[in-house]
Image (cartoon, rainbow, N blue to C red; front, side, top):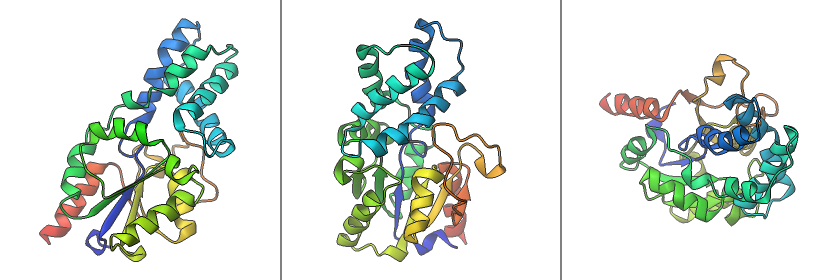
Amino acid sequence: MRLSEFDALTFDVYGTLIDWETGIAEALTPWAESAGLAVTRADLVAAFGRFESKRQQENPETRYPEVLELVFEDIARSFGVEPRPADAAEFGESVGNWPAFPDSAEALAYLARHYRLGVISNVDRASFVASNRKLGVDFDIIVTAEDAGAYKPNLKPFHMALERLSEIGVGFDRLLHTAQSLFHDHAPGKELGLTTCWIDRQGQAGGNGDWGATPPPPGAPKPDIVFPSMAALVEAHKKEMAG
């Protein structure tokens, strides 16, 4: 497969472009310390992964900050702490503080010169706007869970994105969906027949068994191409262009 075969790249954002595990841990650590919990960053991120998708599927039309408040309540109770509404609300509004990966903005700036770029993201519009200030690119299409009324791995966000891409002249076979999460993106993407690119930032292809902030995927979805980072994707494209 050659990267030049495609006209558009669509991206998952959180885990692929935004370092959500660092953001989640940095948002939860002060609370955990104040609650006297002897927990690690990995403990907090894994707890998030146990509850986030469940809450999203139970509340498909709820905005992401309110979903995060519910997730915070689940996390607190799982550690034996009764959650306070103020702490839940603070966590719910933390998305805009989650950092971008160091290679994201530069990679997107390069790729925007060669492709139409899109977003299929499990957040609300306002949270994405805050995150996109760190990415610094104007995406051609943006589909959030708030737009679709559903959270991935539900197929509704993908269908909406495909419709919008079609409207700007991008055909199904000329799209490469690019994402970190096998659960949220590659499993539903392969169900639809999409060509997918795995940004495997956690080295999961090596079989480390650590799913971090995401649940394990159903079955064994097989991405079509794998890179360890956005920078590696860009380097592969540059080599291809150089012949």
